[in-house]
Image 1 (cartoon, helix red, strand yellow):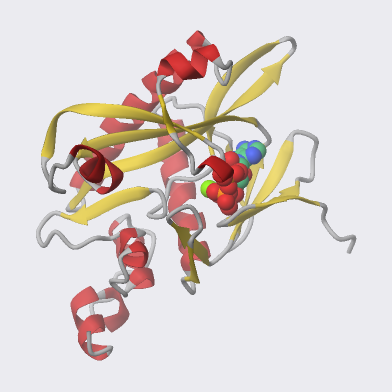
Image 2 (cartoon, rainbow, N blue to C red):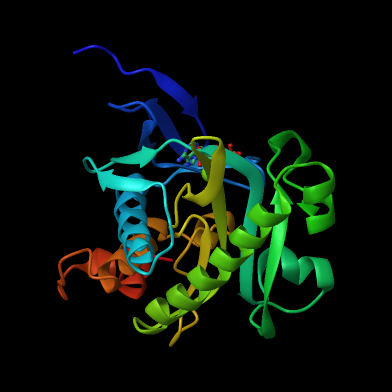
Length: 259
Ligand SMILES: Nc1ncnc2c1ncn2[C@@H]1O[C@H](COP(=O)(O)OP(=O)(O)OP(=O)(O)O)[C@@H](O)[C@H]1O
Ligand SMILES: [Mg+2]
């Protein structure tokens, strides 16, 4: 078989040319990075879980009318997606104070926000993805006024839907990151949801215990990363229910590993 052409290798995924024009194959790696790639590691099995979790969430979002790049899952680590021109902005939605917001404003993690906050970060690794405002986005032409409006509108709808989805399975959706891209139809373009939605780009806290079920386990050397991602997948109904499987239980796992 002819080797597929690789379009891009990122920190967590590889993009290959797809079978038809305008499509790509998104391959999910086990590689994990944090703090602008200063910390690197692998989480064995993460790619398989993120592929499945992101497929599930994008399919549900498609079902409520959010346009996404997702076409179909191809295998354990790959999905077929529509090729987009990525808008160089990370859209972060926050419901609870955590992470960089906690540091920036000196408020302890865990405080519920009285209203949802949307933040924008300029996607530039060399600059460390600096936070920018809508003024910067418009001034430097990274997105148009209409695109910015559509992205913010979709981000709020995604937040409302996912907050409820996760609350239903005992998980608090603290914050998450979205990426959008342009697709062209004749001379017109519109923005659709792209990239992935997985525990790599969300903060997910167990409602009962406060346990972190996301990439903060890696960032903060808490261990049990893959078990946390599995727990999210299990609660979403994506893994077989098996009360006897110790790796699905963070507490027994920690005891097993002596942590
Ligand atoms: N549908 C799509 N079409 C084109 N590019 C996409 C699409 N969905 C996601 N991407 C881009 O593919 C890459 C996915 O790889 P990965 O998440 O590993 O990148 P990354 O290391 O986070 O790098 P970056 O800083 O570019 O986001 C990202 O650059 C993302 O913006
Ligand atoms: Mg990425």
